[in-house]
Structure formats: structure tokens, C-alpha cells
Length: 113
Image 1 (cartoon, rainbow, N blue to C red):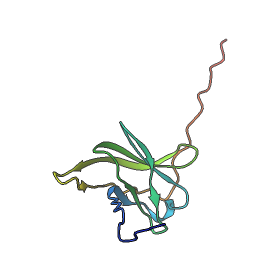
Image 2: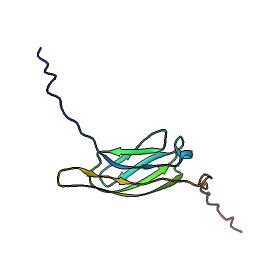
Image 3: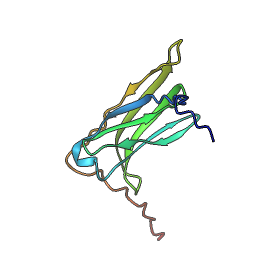
Image 4: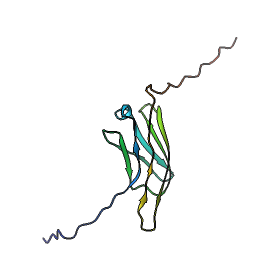
């Protein structure tokens, strides 16, 4: 068996979309990055910094939402690459007011008379 440790495969990952979220959202909200070709869930650190790696070039919708689908904020991001293949990343900050979003109201049917 001849394992040659001098031959490493270089794996290069680049941040494509990143940003910061309000501290009160860190434990309650998932950041989703949605584009034509992909849907990703961002990695969120304890300090509110989030990022997605190696996304294809294109336009993305970034949202911070909880498990019920309540959206707390977001924006758009455009990811591109230069001639050398380096990603020009996009930053979108997600902020929230001190109160949670309004609950969607259920439509009530009118009684016929």
C-alpha cells in the first residue's frame, strides 16, 4: 500500500451569500436562500452571522423564517463570478422588530341569511 500524503486534493469553498441577523432571531429563525437552480439553508453562527457556500451565479431571495412560515425579514442577493472563477459574494442583513410577526388571520365565512 503506497499512500502518498504529498498529493492532496485542494477543495476550495467560497462564501456566496452572507449577512447578519438580529440577535433575538438566532435561535428562532432559519435562513433560506432560494434561486432558480438551488434552495439552500444557510449556516447560522451563535453571533448571528450566516452564510451559504458555493452557490451558482444568479439572483437569490434570502428570507429568515420560523418553522410555521412566519417571515422575519430578508432581501435579494446577486451572486457572480469573475474571470478566474472567484465568487463576488452578496450580503443581506436580516433584522426584526422587537415583536414577532403578526399571525395570519383565518378567513371567516359569512353566514347566509
